[in-house]
Figure (cartoon, rainbow over the protein chains, first blue to last red):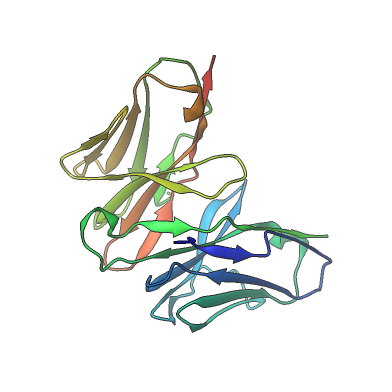
Length: 118
Length: 110
């Protein structure tokens, strides 16, 4: 299995531009999570989906952030317009909580997208 | 009060030492507990799940104390390769949300 795949790995943009981050979860996983990590605040949950449906978006910082999951194998996180304070590493993770045994509830992370907004 | 709290460290220990990290959580309804490891500029990866009865995986031992609402991680015979940030993770109650601590940095010195 290829694991969780995120793109791009690095993104440098200017303030005011639209940024789209992409994620392909592990095949068969029915939960998908978007996180943001900064030195100051650590790893923060932004939003998560179950079976492509957004369940909790209370962590989304403001209306400039939006996330979609049009199908089971693809999700996007969009920032429009971007601001310098959005600079962070954005991680996508997926899990299969209904599986049995030791694998239950484990989250698997993608390599992250390092975003710099100038 | 943060939902999950960890001592940020850094813990600087010599090779071969035993080191222990604690993590406290505020939601008594929390159901699942984990330790993740994160190397510099990499993604978090599961180190081990934490079970009520405590569990061991080689040099690593994790324990859960529900009454006091803390979990611990013990690393024996530290290796240089153990240098990383260790994240305490708690899955709370009914919601399928994972709350991450800010991590404890460990540096094992030669």
